[in-house]
Structure formats: C-alpha cells, structure tokens
Length: 92
Image 1 (cartoon, rainbow, N blue to C red):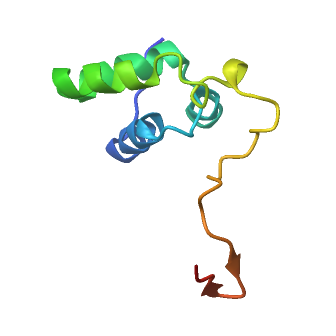
Image 2 (image 1 turned 180 degrees about the vertical axis):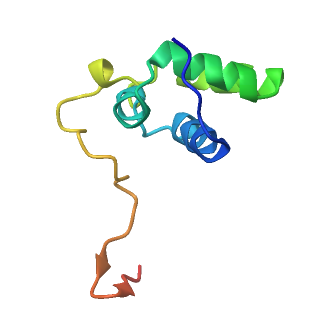
Image 3 (image 1 turned 90 degrees about the vertical axis):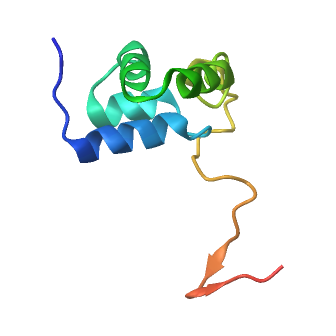
C-alpha cells in the first residue's frame, strides 16, 4: 500500500534520511515507512547523481542502522554538540 505524504512530510523524510545520525528506525517510527520505502522515496525525489552519492554514504553505516549501532549510542545528539546552560550557549 502506497502512502501519500504532503510536501512538508516528504521534505522531513528526506531531511531525516540525509542526516547521518538519524536511523531508519526513527523514520519508520515517525512516518510508518520501512527502510526500503525510504530508499524508494529518495530515489524518486532526488537527482540520480545525488541519490547514488547518498546511497553510497549510508549503505552499511552504523548510525543509520539500529542493528549495527553499539549499545551506548542510543541518543541522537552528536558528541560534538555544545551543552546549553540557562539560555546561554557555552563558549569554547
């Protein structure tokens, strides 16, 4: 069964798929589509060269596949992201 998405939802799916640290499981949880359906959307919505570049980058990537992730990487926040304390961004 093909799901119909609004333009805004498609943009969000593509954005999540493009992000290296967002696993396919998060896309499935939020939009109810499998990894294969996500790949089909990316193939349909992107230029062929962009799709090939994305596919090469995410194939086998540990952060995109929950089964390949280590047990301590359950969070989506990057370790390089700065801590925010009381409305002020921490300085280096």
